[in-house]
Length: 360
Ligand code: PMP
Image (cartoon, rainbow, N blue to C red; front, side, top):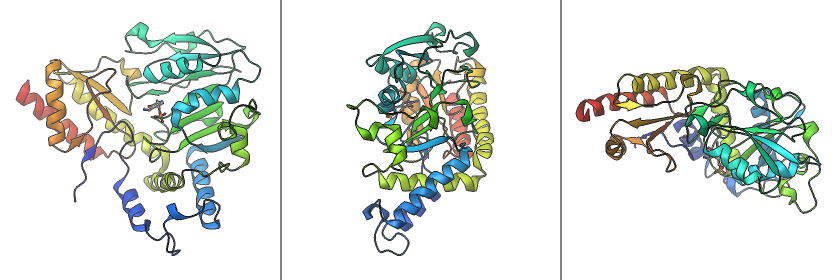
């Protein structure tokens, strides 16, 4: 059996060794003669595993004690609304930085629940960069400032963490979490779906500063309340038990790789290799300001758009999977999450050179 090089934007590649371990443990978890997915989430063996996952995440990300770590369902999309139900309190509005499709969606969905102010919109620059966060006119009365550090579709990544003063900073880290160390203490809330850098789909991570935890309005389902979920160890009801377990395997794998500083170094190297290949000729292009280029989602076009479909078909035939760009923007996208090895990026760069020689 051979594994292809997988550049999927999500659900995304998982390390082969993680899948092999899951396979080895699938039928019999720790000598119990049952799979972990056939076990009560309240059984001591499961609880022990689940608590270890949280401890490992706290350790990897150096999450301070005054932050709650919560596992939820519904993906990042449900968080676009849950954020408001949890953080708005008696505030009237929230501020949003728009840098691409996902932060725009977050703002649009939020605007159904409260007033939202758009601090900046990268459409002004045709998504080739965002506005410097120092220029944002933040409302001191806003419940929070929301941004997306890495835009999965437009391929823009913030060069630094915005400073929002006393207004809590809320970040949709779906496509860049665990790809590099972050200073969690700069944030009010960090959230993200797991299916890119943390594990499989079905589980959503929320890290929330404890002083922001508050009671939700009575009509908000308790499973969407950060405070209620934190109080119950994210087990108000049955959690996605198998996804939680796979997240655990992924976190152990990250620790074995040397943690987030090691991942950052490798992710920088992978992205640099691919951008260098793109910039080498006019056959391929990426017009994003180099300081805003994403390390996780490298988007590019071919000078001849008619060749893009050929590129996708031929790369797939060469064992390079899922390079078609998102339907909203077209082109090509290579997602280089943690589980994508340098070897995969080298194979892609070689393929690009060879494709250019044949079609250029
Ligand atoms: N935010 C970002 C940055 C994303 O990349 C995605 C998914 N591609 C989402 C939100 C939506 O995530 P979900 O499908 O988990 O709701």
